[in-house]
Length: 400
Length: 140
Image (cartoon, rainbow over all chains, first blue to last red):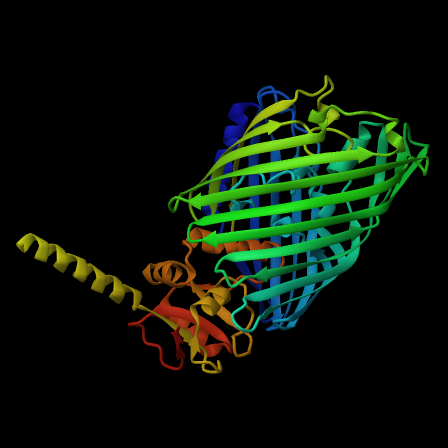
């Protein structure tokens, strides 16, 4: 996509934002609210192609997403809602519209609520809100913990949640909890199926039962929240290998994520930090081999609202992967393929209450291309990887 | 000496004007609401979607103003956000399925009308606006 085309798309997005407002219509005696959001991004890298796009030549604008949301309050403690989501991120998403979430929510007490249907998964600070680019200072959240190419893996589950909040006595703040269970079913245009396609493995389904929880404490220190999340999964992938007739199957023997986090907000300043460990022990190639993937990622971020139209921010994102198992046949990866240390600076410009645009610089040490995806894929880097990558990210969007 | 007195006069005058401006916003609630006062922290929780009930119990239904000086003053005094970040916070809750967006109304009188007719409703208006039939909450 040419720079002129990217510029016209960005201007179109900004123009749309001027004409869009939240809508309401009546269904019987009740009001149905309609809201939406959309973004358009452009990425240019100095070397490796990133996020399945051809970013290293003139750059790529194959970075678009949007969502449309409807909700209705049926009774004071009962509501229903749903959201469509669609995206194109390089070779991912493929404009296949998804039911992002759709659920019934019953909240009889502050400390007790129920959600049933397809529900956004609460995992750390941003998993359930990672698509709401308008609410974030950064164009890309720290990829060590929130890889945009693996969005489908943790974004939602089909099942149910129990959740609530309660104030603590003696001015000790408040606590909030979420416990959930259900099933995960990944979109086939996501990062992991795309990675396997480079080994001539073509998945047709990928998912399985999941359960977990989140517990967070709004501490007595004003603006300070700390928390912990846990996700357990049992994932099975099915498809073919090498051609259309040879069946392929893999499944996880052990599959869990732990996430620890804290955030602090004081006036115009925000700071966040999270640590995530993802461990997956798999049986692959129809039980022929074993493979263990141990991913550890963390970040520290800060942002400051300079005035009503400008926010600035920076983060350091640290990603490290340790693959082991019989499938590797003793392979020793170069260290650059096991790490991605990303230093990021960003500026967000607010156009009006509906629209914004962001300019962001990434300075990455390592490409983390070993065994499990984190932005860099051999599919779009057939000549191999350079150790370091600099990236310019421009992203604009609207919400109403 | 005259110069210092003049400067002192200007500073004191400014402080009085600021204090008066902050007193221009009042918080009102439906007469069914049991409490007659609310802490600043609880008010912030209600108007940022972090609380679904009043501290003493009972569902809460906040009403917002779309824009204007009273709205800006309310956000500055009680919420600590500008309008863009305030609405972005609500929208991220809406898009993640956690809430329905509260009513956004065009005028103070529309807010009074909404609060009068809806159990658990809470809103904010300019002090000069007629507000018969609602309860004025003291913000601690």
